[in-house]
Image (cartoon, rainbow, N blue to C red; front, top):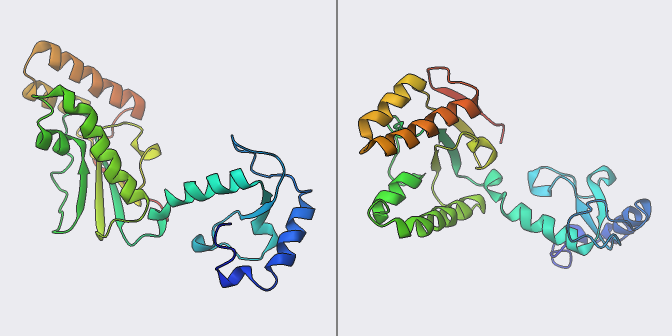
Length: 224
């Protein structure tokens, strides 16, 4: 661990605890990640201490090689949002649905909406800006995941039917007008039959992946 020489908890009995865990696990890495060297020379907290894990409990410790330990530390950095003061709401809905209508955002709230970024950059008139728009959203999401956002609330708006597995959130809200209304929304906003047909396919795909809509908004919360 990179802070072993600085953090007080790694002093005192830590040297003995570390040696005991390495011997218990036969100096063999217990993570076996893609860069694993097999030979364990560090000890990892299975449940991070800042998430409630015990410092010296053997059941919360395992032997790891340096590569796997460092890779795990890097992954922890992208999950700092879990302990951040920013409360994240993920809002999901099919394409063409107004997912921000009842947002009730307050000054200082962070809203990450790809459509809004597109509009600000003029991506519709300049398709070559599609890549930069994605990078802009990705950069903002990276700051949010790393816990560096100062807003008390953040909203992630997504039309991806599998958004729950892609984005961080504390609360998720599904805005579901029903497939028929979602298709009417698309037909009302399309500029050509081709565009309408493509958008309609995206709407049907959304409902197919979600295994059908309920016709009403739903909410669900994680404990973290």
